[in-house]
Length: 293
Ligand code: CA
Ligand code: ZN
Image (cartoon, rainbow, N blue to C red):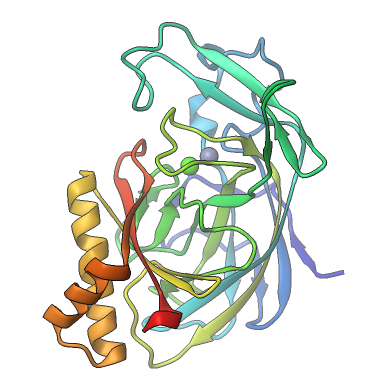
């Protein structure tokens, strides 16, 4: 049995002052048990968001202290497996998300997970694509960043690439890095346009590596030969620009291109993509197939 980090200890903001709930060694496989982003408060379609306690949104289990991780190191987090609890739940509500100005009534939707599918209705059953919405490390000293907000430290990136087989890289800002995670999704499209996805509690199996003397633009994702730089900003325009610059600089540093050359290549075979457009900062990624470089 690998180590299990229980969900009885959660945080609602990433900062260096959080006490760690467990420690793990690099290379060790361990599991983080997480609640859904509503802390399990919505159990049926009669449970409305009006009665919900909004102080318990986006719990992230942890933080976990990583032995040997020091400020300036790069932390590689490999997502080995995600096991979700059924059912998942989602909401749509007036004023929330991209369609919020058109939605007249709040709806709570329960989505059973069966046979590797998310059951929306008898007619609509979609393939399960599990991912983790909130994952990150303590940010720079003095910062206190809500688990609802994404940033350089990770956090609420809501990036659908963050499923089994993906690795995500963060910069360590304090001893032990203080990794926490939560907000898992059974299925989400780019944008997360109604403000949430198929939200589910469950188990996130991870393995970590601490990389010394390495610099990378963070957050950085590797999955099935694709690499992505991730950035969050007030507007999607800014987020796209930041993610694109991060990738251009990465290609210059690692592949010997000059910046213009990197730009030309990125314009041909790279993709500027949306992670989410519904959180306090919007998140974009720039993705390119490293096998073509
Ligand atoms: Ca989220
Ligand atoms: Zn979520």
